[in-house]
Length: 143
Image 1: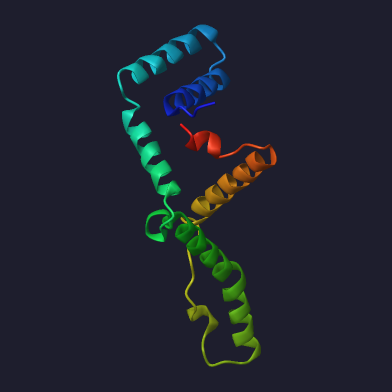
Image 2: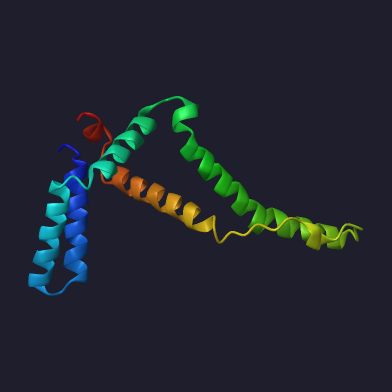
């Protein structure tokens, strides 16, 4: 089974329409508009981006394919600092009666970072599920 990005996008769009629009006639109109948009070439940018992402992921150079792991490690390090290291150091400073004010330790605003981290964890979990189901990446690479 070959991976066709246009078909995948249309299938996702049709599934979303089916779930969100209970009226069958209105859903049919929206699906027709989605198909028309695809035929007009409005998905060309999405497909081009998918092809770039696929080429980056296949490259073994850390300078090309290493940005995803870099983002993961940065998010993980920020998470560890905010929830483990910073409270531990603050407690240690208080227990040791340090002259350094624990409130002066840098605080990270995780509101911006957590959606990225949780999204990456979700994709990783989904890929693990696919592997458990026997889905191979070779079927996508032999296009």
